[in-house]
Image (cartoon, rainbow, N blue to C red; front, side, top):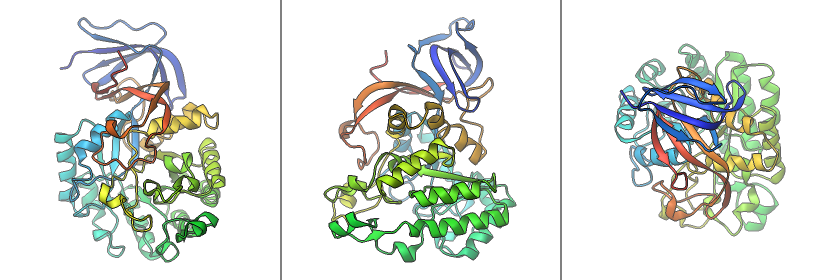
Length: 432
C-alpha cells in the first residue's frame, strides 16, 4: 500500500479520448482512481498533494525504438541507465531492440531482459524478439515460445530483411500469435556503403550516398506483403517523402499497417551533417528539407502514427572517426518530447497529435495497457512545461553515451515530473 497522491491544477491532455481540460488526478495504489475537471476531488486522509501549476499532465511516453548495450555492450548503455534517461524525458515505457550480444532470439533471453529490467530500472521495459535466428535473415525464430516468454513484437532492429520470401513467412507466422512485425525497410544492395543521403551535398562532401529508393523499394514490398497476409505490420522509421506517399496509399487499404518516424528526421535535415559531424550519421539518414517537411505533414494528417527517439548509444571511440568510418546512431530518450514540441511551437502540428504519436498509438500498435489517462489505468504519467527554456548540455545527459543530435541545442519545453505506477521516478529541480 502506497500513500495516495493527488495532482491538482493540471492541464490534463489525453490523446486517447481527445480530452484537454484543467483538472486533477487522484492516484491510489499505483492506478488512477479518480479524474475531475475543475476543482480537485476529495482526497483520502494523508494523501500527498502536488500543485501542477497549470502544466501539462499527459500519459507517460512510449518509445517504440530503443537500442541499449545490454547484454553485450554495457559500456554504451545498460537497461538501468536507459531507464534513468527515459524517465528524465517523460518516457515511461521503452521497446528495446533485440540485436544485442547475444541476439534476443530465445525465450530465456526474453525472460532475462524482463527480470533484469524489473530489478534495475524504474520504467517499463518491453522486450522485442528477433524475427530470424541471430538476425541473419534466414531461419525464423520460434515466435510462439518467444511470445509466451513475453516478447511484445518481432523485429530485426537495425537490420532489414532482404528476402521477400522470409518476410512473407514471418508475417504469416506472426498472425498466428497476433504479434506485430516491426521492420526498418532498407535494400542493402542500394544502401551498400553509403553514409548519408544521396544528392548534391553528399557529392560535395565526397561521401557515398544512400538513395531514397533504398527505403521505398523494400517499403513497397513490405506493404504489399502486409496486404497479402493481413499481418500487423509497422514500418519502424521512414525518412522520405515518397515513403509517406506509399504509406498513405496502403493505409487506405489496411488498418493493420502503421508507420513510424524518428524525431531526428522530423526536426533535422541533411544540412545538419555540416562539417562531417558524426553525431548526425544516422539510420535512416537525414534527408532533404523537402523530405522533412513531407514527414511533418504526414504526421499532421495521421499517415505517420508513431514518433520514436531511435535511441542508439555509441561510445566516444565509435564516433571519433572519419564520417564514413564512424558508428551510426544517436541517443534521444531525454530529448524526444522537447524535440517534438518544436513541431508544436512552429505551428506545424498540434499538441494532441504529437502526444498521440508517443502515447496511445504506440500502445494500440503493441497491444499494451498504457498510454492513457483513465480511471483504473496504471498511473504512468508525464508532467511537462511546454514553454520551459533550456539547453541540452553534455554534462546533464543521463545516458552512458553522449552522442546526441541535439547537443547544445536550445529547447522550449521540458519534463518536470515522471511517474511510473504512481511512483515519482524523475523530478526536475526547477519544479518546486
